[in-house]
Image 1 (spheres, rainbow, N blue to C red):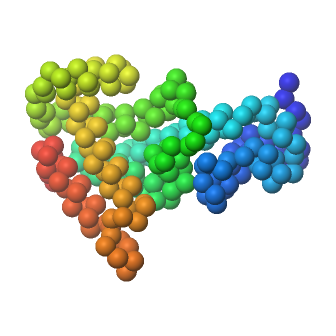
Image 2: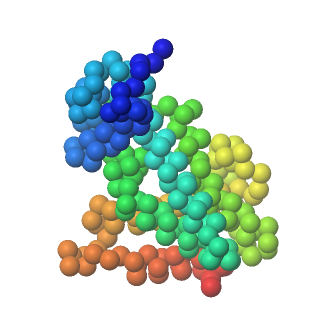
Length: 229
């Protein structure tokens, strides 16, 4: 039976996660402490244990929330009424990925950054949440392929065998070449976003806007796909 919630924290589970995010922003995910969260919320540690029995359970919940937040941002971007073509959808989703990362840097770092000591993500919980964001891009590419707008190359047998694991994980029924293109495109953009987020993309402190670089790279991706505007 879960404890009664105080008027100060009507939704204790969310209050714990919000406090954890602030703690991570200040000191990093490795320093996350349930007891420190309890002190900040002015509650007893056992009250937290009813929701998160240990630190790793809380980390898992934060990672799942981060993936869901990212997926929601990408879905909203590709469903925008101003997005008319497959190329428009890809541009919108890539920009949304970058914008989400820059505005949620702590969550981005927790999901894609340095591994957290003594934490092993439970794949049966994390994988379904993680698949959501990649599935948005796969859906766009699959639609373009179905419409005859996107041409895909024949893959080598070793690459097909490797990608089959992704096909199975994502329950995808189309050509594995779509998975290959989605993964390659995500790796490209993810690398650029990570470089920008951690201050390694621009050449000097005076040059802070990497937007022109991103726009050029998006066009390069569209050219590779045969979807140049």
